[in-house]
Length: 353
Ligand SMILES: Cc1cc2nc3c(=O)[nH]c(=O)nc-3n(C[C@H](O)[C@H](O)[C@H](O)COP(=O)(O)OP(=O)(O)OC[C@H]3O[C@@H](n4cnc5c(N)ncnc54)[C@H](O)[C@@H]3O)c2cc1C
Image 1 (cartoon, rainbow, N blue to C red):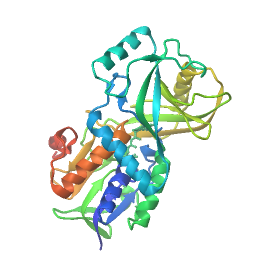
Image 2 (image 1 turned 180 degrees about the vertical axis):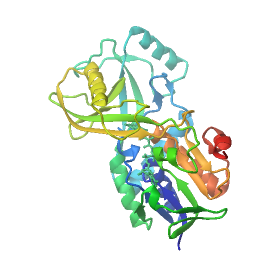
Image 3 (image 1 turned 180 degrees about the horizontal axis):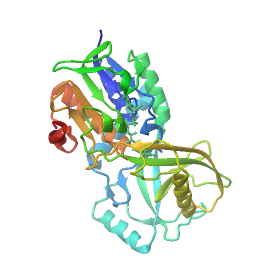
Image 4 (image 1 turned 90 degrees about the horizontal axis):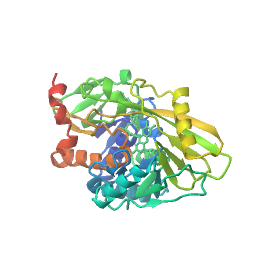
């Protein structure tokens, strides 16, 4: 048996971030992943402190947004790569009434310091912006694949090996004070398997509500807006001159396969934003690991004390991840209770069935 302090399963945003936090603190970590494509590789990479559809701050933004910014700044300096930038988002208004609502929400403090509620004009960028737009500040654009590529490299250099094993190749045995997988053992395993948790023997009774999303990369034939634009979908200009466009929300197809219907829906929305012509360069899909109550699931299994979960990021992985990682670290290392809203123990009844 080869012994580690922790085994972390899953190498997406959750698994890679918690592995980083543990290795940074001097713990030994074995990472195990499968060939399943992570949702993290499909994400278009916006960290937005405002929930645009609800016209209010995203959940717990005043607490979790600063933690998130600090985390990605720290990673940027540790990995020595420029994988994110602070950015503005321009939300194209659909009507005068919508403009009034944004103003009211801003005046009553529902948008924090991230939006004044003023209607702005970004004409000259081929926009269909008849009613003007609302500017959101303080958002981040994060190139998640680039960040993960370098994070994996950093973890490997810091003695955290990564095994690629499918679920059926992993033989787990859980005990009160340790856990074993094949020829490896550890004090704890942290399961960060994204949507695959819906089939996991320990976690499958959590009320997951996974949601598929698709994203296109477009090459425009005319100048594109140099800012992120939102109207039903996001249009995100990239440094190579292309744009990402997405995403869709589908609950009845949970494959990571791009579909013609997904592409058609995105393209229809792109045409609501710009009249410029374009070609499609790439089309990807992923499944968001969401939970019915839209909160992460964090903590130890109620009956298997060597197994923890870090999951349920849904469509807000970037902003939730540093907060959820910190909560789990504090719980495992210092026995601090996990905040109730994200504590896996809210599903104890189901998990004990
Ligand atoms: C189209 C789309 C766009 C998105 N855009 C954004 C965005 O702009 N901003 C944002 O904040 N969030 C966005 N999200 C959500 C975000 O991507 C997710 O919340 C986040 O990536 C989830 O990370 P995760 O590590 O929990 O899961 P994943 O990234 O899915 O990682 C799960 C990992 O577990 C591994 N695994 C699976 N089974 C096993 C097993 N049996 N053993 C070991 N490993 C296993 C997989 O191979 C994978 O490495 C988007 C999601 C999608 C699909």
